Amino acid sequence: MFDVLKRNNKEKFSLSKEDQDLYILLKSTASFLLIKVVAFMDEFDNHFKKCDPISEEEKQIIMKIKKTTALSFETLHKYDIREYRNAVLVHNLRVKRNATYVPVFNEDIMKKLTFPDSFLAFEAIANAVDDIRSEILYHFS
Image 1 (cartoon, rainbow, N blue to C red):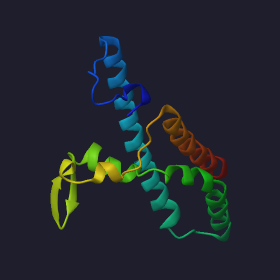
Image 2 (tube, rainbow, N blue to C red):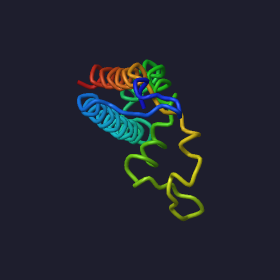
Image 3 (cartoon, rainbow, N blue to C red):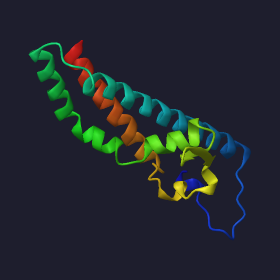
Image 4 (cartoon, one colour):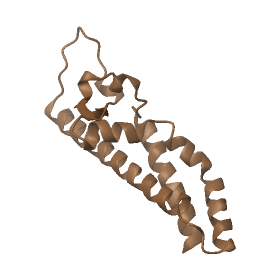
């Protein structure tokens, strides 16, 4: 997941107890972040894309929010966050194929997913969500 954990096939892979604890903390935090980001994106879509604005003023505000947050959403959509969340984090390592759930390991799904694999990528995702949230709060507080 992170650069510190990369190795070639010939090396034995071991971490000190402190590094194992740090790895577990980082992996858990990253997983939780991705779950929350997908929830945020769902709520944004449900509110701003599917609801009818109640007034012309609200419609203009929503259009302004969408325009000013386009770059942040581009950052979020750079990765297959939703697919990774669904296949690995919340649906017991299964993907739906032909109306049947199969283990993710039987699929090449993990090879196809674009996943944030560095601290900078996770920081960019967190900052993108914070930018979108700040823009919404600025206009609707």
